[in-house]
Image (cartoon, rainbow, N blue to C red):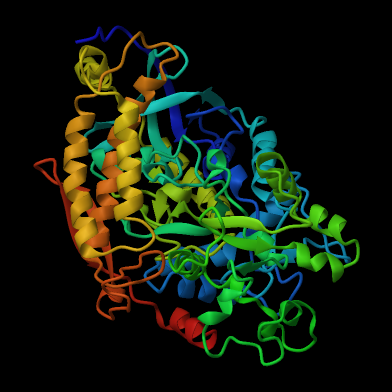
Length: 606
């Protein structure tokens, strides 16, 4: 076995893993509580995936439409999640999001403004009223900038370019982690009274994704291996609009803000196909198939919402249908056109550039497309994980004491389908709660010592790939996994393909156990990939097992062999956990019933 060597040790009260919006907000709140906080991030500080959230942060501030309220936001979130959400999380989220946005503004975030000087809010898919506070189409970037600028004054110790390979436990609770620095390959032990996971999603388990290289399901797999429950892992969101051309940028996100600002979807025949399948009470009697109808006619605002802003799962499946029917764009997508509005608004092309500056530059630089003059080619891309670590709604603690989770790595708020913009308010609301409660736990539970032999065992397992001179290339196994998941457990699923995926995962796990890396631990991307593979295999199996068990179509989970909803399955969540034999176990647990007051809110807002 490769030499284990020594390691450096760090002691904190609260350790946060991940430096996106949730991790930064948790670290800020924990530091504000007066405890010693450490922050680990897999990449460089500021390189968090939060910056890819472009459209805005959802909060019922009622700045644009005074009919909005937390109750309507709550009802929209529950409806979007197909009522398998954790209702208490959805309630807290809707109630607290406006305060978190105003707090962010007080820390220096520069939101777009209304003429009256209040924070401007835009339409977004699944939201009844204009609700997304935004900074052009760079909202996530502004959020990260603000949180970082505020956080550096809180005394938080930041460890950049570190990968966590295992959580450490003592007497049943999490007491720290083993990690290595990606640059030199040296191991570190972080001891902490409480640990917060804020590691994001699992998108790199799929071939086509908007997610960057860090999103390999690390937090979900770490929690699972430590004995925590994972919830709702079948619910993967495929964003309807990612770039499809050129191949080097396939999957990169095209913000829903394009459609929120008036972009329309057309097939190769030039037809606006989203009108083909929309709710009967949705179609505007005045607009029908006219672009201007939804945006410029006077009258009821509900009739002015375009079908392009139906929920993401619906739009993604409609795009897939057009492509499969041979009505797609030349490179396997459809056309998204915002250029038509330049003749309808003051400023013309400059209006589009002002509202969507990042999208203008993204398409100009990467695809040589001027979005003010021509349509974009877009198609579905793996985007977001609704499932994740099961947490307590109030505290964000997992089912393992001392381990918390917030943001995309945690489950419950979004149910079967996340509404656009709810991710950023999720980060703020539950990042704060996770940091606050982790600090309280740490004050009552001091960091514990872990035997050197256990740490040596963890490091030994992490180095095993160096001991196999004739093993397989880890990048080839990763590629095979991504292609297999894309093909068999993707946007549309059937039983035979998911069962095939589970069989393939067994073979891939055997291949992963035999990967080999050359050279030494410094600057070794092959070794990094070998470490990531175990996590990707764990989350892929969880997705497949839950997808097989849910024999219905609900939200982001669509079964072609069970296209309708099953009332009985609509009352259960799926939980996976590691069994005593080391194999994955699945359990169906009842969805928490809505209390009478929340049920009334849902009914009133149907």
